[in-house]
Image 1: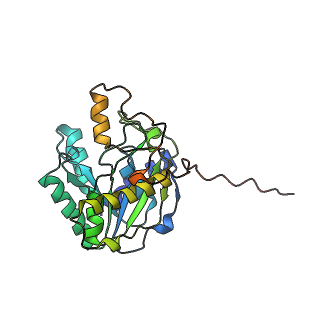
Image 2: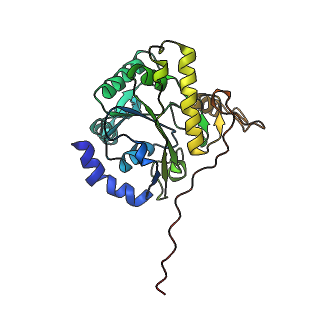
Length: 264
């Protein structure tokens, strides 16, 4: 109930007015049944914008810090995240991350949509970073299809370090479902998990037009924080996930407005 109240009454209308989201591929989201919505991650608002354009409820994983804040603002943030069904995850890994994945599996077994950011954290510079294999484990253990989602322009509306986003138009491109049933029962094979993850990331690269960097986003952030110069800089030989050929794609543009109709 709180999810739909936030989407349709309290927050949704304001976000639609601010961002005027355009979308392609909405027909690729199934009308029912479980599916994993695997998205690139450019800004905090990604988790708020994607649900706007969907008729079904989607639940995301969120960093545990959102649930542990103090003071009025911290309690309000925690209450909002719980209200919209966000699942806390400790990004340090270990048992906490395992518990979050198990919760995601429960969501999928109940026939719901589960949202995940395979990069594990926001991109520090708008590029696409190496995916973590948790998304592959979810796919193989649940048997649910993976639907790649490319957020476009959310990093321009809300650059890292910006709390209040700017009113800019943003987009969502939704790809065709990816079926990994051929790997059923192989979720303990780390090579299979890496192959599945790279296939998902390649699809995200193809949809978003982002440059790919074959390191984890968290590693890049740590290097930048340590003052490492030219860390993860553009390579003269661009790469793609899993050593695949680099797709010849560009960042998607919003649809063109139709020309005015002549009355003559």
